[in-house]
Amino acid sequence: MLEIISSRTGHPTATLEGIHLHSAYDPAAEAERFIKQIIKDDKPSTIILLGAGLGYIIRAVQCKFPYAKLIPVFYSEEISANCTQKASFFWHPGQTQTLLSFLRDHINELDTEGLKILEWPASAAIFPELSKTANRASSQLLKELRGSIFTTLSAGKRWIQNSFMNFISIDSTLCTNPDSRIKLPIMIAASGPTLERAAGLISRYRNRLFLWALPSAVFYLMEKGLLPDLVVITDPSYYAMYHLHPLAGRVINLAMPLSASIGSWRIPGKIFLISQDNFFEKALLEKAGIRAPTILSHGTVAATAMELALKLCNSEIFFTGFDLCYEDIKSHARPNTFEFFLQNTVDRLHPFQSLMYTRAAELAPAVKRNNNISVRSSLSLETYAGWFNNLSEDVKLKVYRLNPTGITLHSMKEIDTSAMIRHLNSVKPLISHKPFIDRKQYPGREERFSKALKLLEDWDLRVKKAMDKITAKKSIDPLITEPFQLSLAYYIDPGSLTETKRIFRLKGDRHAARKALSFLEKERNFMQSIYRKIEYMKAYDRNLNS
Image (cartoon, rainbow, N blue to C red; front, top):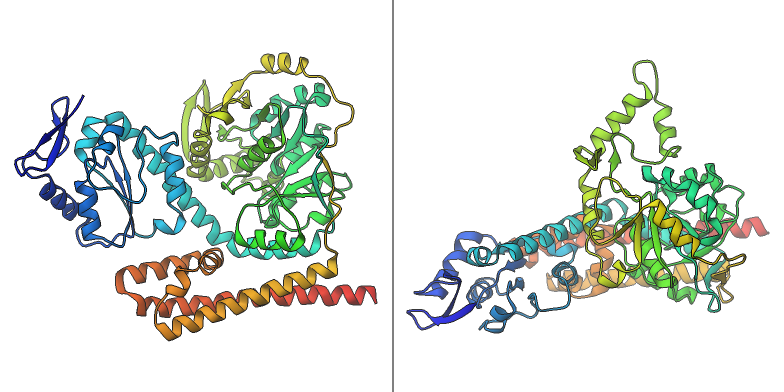
C-alpha cells in the first residue's frame, strides 16, 4: 500500500513495501541531480518520463528544458493523483487507453529527433512489471516511428507523385453498396508459407467466404484457381503492381490509396479508393468529390486490409498465410513472383536453394525454434508483429489467424483447419454478392487535369510565401508552425527537415533558417517536376484525340 509521508525538508514523499519513491531528506534536490546526471549537456526536444513519481522529476525537467515536449508515464493511478506537478498530458494505469496507444497519439516521427527516454529508478524497483511493460511499449513505438521515417525517406516523394498520377489516370471508381454490406466472413490471404495449407479449404468453401488478397499472394492463388474478390494494395513501388501481372485479362477490383503503385488501369477491374489521411491524398480526394474510408498507414498492407475489413464487414475476419516469419529459408507460399528474380541468377555455382538460403540469412537473420519449426525473423517483421500484438479488445473478438506457425500474436485468436471447417459449415452460402457498386459522381479526365494543376500551383505559392517570411524574419517559424508546410516538408524530404530541427535545437533560428530555405527550394523543384509531367500527359491526350 502506498504511504505518503513528509521528507525532512517538508516536501511529500512516498513509500511502498518499504521502498522510498523519493528521497526521505530532499526529493526536489534528488530529482535535479538525477536530471543533470542523465541528460548532462544535451538539449532534448522530447522527453518520455517513465515512472514519473510525485512530480519532482517533472518539475526538474520543466525548469531545465522549458521548450521540450514532456510526456510523463505514471506506474500508479494513486501516485498520479498525488502528483504535485502535472504536464499537458500524461498516462497512468487507470486510463482505458493502452500506454502504447497513448504514446502513438502524442509522439510523431519528427519527435524522435532529440528524443530522450528516462525512467525513475525507484519507480522501476517498486513496479517491476509495469516498468517492463512501459519499456516494451516505448521500444515498440521507437521501432514503428523509425520504420516510418525510413519508409518516408525512400518513398515520400513517390507517394505524392503516385497520388497525382493515379488521380489523373483512374477513370472510374467504386463505392460501398448501401444495400449489401459484406455478410460473409472475409478471408485475407497473405503470402506466408501456411497459405499453401489453406488453399484446399478456401477452394472447397469458396462460396461461403469473401476472399481478399494481399498483392504477394495473388500469383499463388491464381495458380490454384482462386480468383480474389478484392486485392488490397498500398505499396507505392513498381513491384507491388508487378505482383498483379497474373491478373492480366481478369476482372478484379482493387482497394488502394491514391499513393499506391501506378498502373492499376492495366487491370480490367475497378478501384475502391481509401484514404491514408495524409494531406495530399485528402486534397485530391476532395477535388474528386470522394469521401473515402480513412485507414491510417501502418507500414504493412496486412494492417490496412484488416482495418478496411473491420469497417465493411459484420462477420468474422480470418487471416491465412499471415506468418510474420520465414519457415526455415522459405518466406512465401510457392510459386511466388519474387522467385523469378532469383531463378534468373541460378547457375552451376549458385543453385536455387543456395540463393534462397543466402537471401533468408540476409533479410531475416534472427533464427529460433518455435512449435518444432525453425523460423527466421527480422526487425521489420518483429515491428509488424509488435503492432498486431496490441490490437484493441473489440478487434480481438473478430479477427483470427488460420493455422499460424512460428510467431505468436497474443492479440489475435488462432483457429485450426477443423475448427474453420465447422465454422464455414454454419455459414449460409451466397450466390450473388455485390458489396461494391460504381460511383456515379466522378470528375472527367479533363477536369482532373485542371484540378491537379491548380492544386500544385497553390502549393507552390504557399511554399514561396513561407520562404519569403523565413528570409525576412531569419526564423523557421513559418515552417514549423504551419501544419501544411511541416507535412509537405516531411513527405518530400524528412531527412532535411529532421536536420533543420536538430540545427534549430542546438544552434538556433538563424542557422536553421539557411537549411530550411535550401530544402524548401528543392520542394518547389519537385512539385514543378510533377506539374510538367501532368502537362505532358495533358498534351499527349489532346494529340491522341485530335
